[in-house]
Picture (cartoon, each protein chain N blue to C red):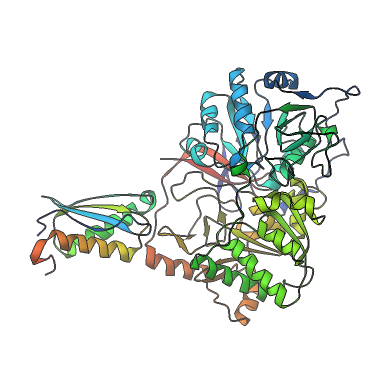
Length: 90
Length: 521
């Protein structure tokens, strides 16, 4: 359960900044230099993680050219932080 | 505008209204079958002048009026003053103030800093652009479809061909001259705005109907000891307060990259040169100044030193590192069409074997033999490359024009071994594409693509692949490497473009069209 706003990552090159906020329905936004070519990849990836962890949140990603693994780690960590003490993992 | 598919499967227009008709690209040397010749003719425009005519003026309007420039005509500039150039802004502002419109702008290239050109294209002063590239605001304006007539992008050799064949007919050339005497003898090797070689400008001076030297440094007559462009090609000498910012013209020496990815890539590229068997006495070499390219030169130098090898010539855009190799005796000569940094600028005055060559001599495929066709090895950069080895140096990941073609396709076509170096991914985006957005150098002329993760050899060069394998080099199939990198980065989509709206075309060196650039959405 997402109970508060939380962030993970940074705006350093090759990283991304993920911000998670409580929301009634899942939504995500993606911005950065690679928006034109990686929008679909990132939407797929974020949705997959949110579904796996059964969370409902607004996920905002500012991408500075992060690799797949970086994006995953940042999204999962942001969700983890936003979930409070109980965590998001089953 | 009818679109035709060329031999690379790319759609190109058969005609650009307001520019002319075009043929689709066939193959790198298809033009040889056409057995082109032209009758001998005077190479220079005829324009007899009385003795002792005064060529010097400091009145820019008067100089322009005397040139006979009219709306719709073609003007040219060189880009030897790099980011410090003040000639293009000076002249375009004057032309705009005088109310000119519908001009064709045909510079050898546009410096990075010249965003203001976009405004003159929007205002209607310039309605056609022929260039080696378009970056910054100019690139964005073109890619956004703000400019009606598609831009024609050419390599340096292709531009030389186009000028000599008459596809580009220059009415007035405004040539920035770091040192110039009262009758128009010029050189780039002296003066506070010194830029080194004036190789691109030499061609414009020979073929423009009217030539105006623009200088901030009027020298005692006769200019000495070097003359890049002689007085008999020059109509007027225009005195300006400044032709450029010396700090931005004479940038510091280009340093060799310390980025480990670049260095690993350079090492791999050097190992491939070694395995090719081409690094022997009398070899020739061209290398760019950026990223991994210059680092390859450092490995080559060490190898030549250890093995007591002396090369014949270094070619191209010259960096300080190449001059160092000349001065330390690793090459007999440097053939210089364009100087990249400060350390090169006065080298031609100092070193008799540092030789200024013009753009046609450098890379024009239609003359009687250009130096690019004598080249053994060339190391070239890329924005991206596809599985057919086609290289893009022009459009970014977002589809927007942001680069310049330079001598890329000329040297790739001419060299015995053309090696493309680039990191396997940049900013999270893989360098190998299924299909590059814009073909600037056809894959048929590329022998290998080298990254920090391995060496991909064009299947057309089975001999090279065998040599590389025998030498134990990390040879990978380009599709395998693509998959390896995509496992890290994910698979990017192509940026969305409007294929009904061509905003630019990329011309091959021989005048045929390689590809179209479309409006971004």
